[in-house]
Amino acid sequence: MAFEFGAFNEYSDSVTIADPVILAVAKAIKLGNWVGKFFEAMPAPAVTITTKDFEVYSRSKTSRDGAVGTGGWDDDDTADLPVTAAFAKGVTKGHVIRVGDEVMIISSVDRTNNDITVLKRGDAGTTAAAHSAAAVIEVIGFAGNDTDLKDVEGMHETTSKYTNYVQTVYEIIDWTKHGELRRKGLSEAQATANLITEGETRVAEMLARMSIKGYKNVATNGSTRYMSAGLIQQLTDTNSGARAPLTYAVGGTLTEAKLLAALKTVFDAGGSPDTIWCNPTVKGYINNFNIANSSLAINANKDDHGAGGQYVNHIDYEGNILAVRVDRDMPGGSIAVVNQSLCKKGWLENDGLRLVDEPAASSREMRKSLQGSVGFAIEGVGAEHILLTGITGGPAGRVYTTASAN
Image 1 (cartoon, rainbow, N blue to C red):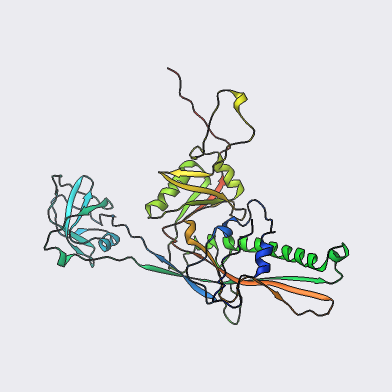
Image 2 (tube, rainbow, N blue to C red):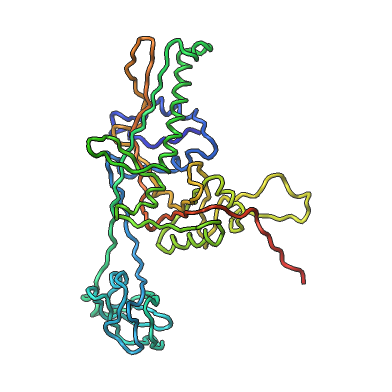
């Protein structure tokens, strides 16, 4: 199977038409079992990258649920009930809320002072009660009437904008007509194909690492060295202020409970992750978990066991099936839980990966270069993905329990 370098626009891009040499040689690239898997899994962005800097857009996912504000609520107050600012932003007249076992209907919202007024306390046959600050407010429905429509206010999500850059990849292929491969009996065409294959393999390994470990850098003060942030930096970068990444500090041994807690965090944020990325060592820890949806059969007769172990290929979280995949370049102390469709790679328009003839100092020399400029876009940061950090170890083996006979 060919290495997936990424999509080329062969209709509107006169320079980076899908280079037949690149595509043909890609079929011969042999990387390790765990090399470049994340890069290859990244789809192309919907819009072609046309400049060295490009914007990664993500829409917010605001929950209408919130919390009681400072000071709490008495059991008989209906007006000026303090709430958190985030809650005041998302509700309007007619929303039905529940705090503890008490149900109320909002009659107005003051977003300047972050408080609400309700029609009555203890609505829908429930009992009014006092509620302390930080008590959870849950929106459970809407109960408007025909005259409310003129007073109902809408809410809208916001778009965050994260700037990333493209990074130029450049690999020189340099040989002479009487080079070592020719002396070993290969024809010029065979020697050329071998050297290009070796060059493309080095580029593939570089792209694989960049997509995960790349750092963002912009050309300043006359510098023309752009760098593109890969997966890890985009899932942790708070410097721009544009996005608030989700992270989970494992702080030592990875356990099933911690992984499930991280998954709960991202699903509660409104995300729909479908893939768990880790390195081979961390995958060994996960293989010892009992939460896999892989078929695990414990046979009573030892003669029924075959060679080999049990491997966790998927995690079933509340009916959501997440693939567990391995990439060698994932950091040893981290796990990335992502929505794979939102992790994208794209080549700069008119600067896609291609093979270019380079000038040689001598007519006996032959020089070509593999070159192109690529960028990475992780959309949906803050809702769709979460990074687990600080993993130092994991379970040494599965622990099985059996029901005792009565």
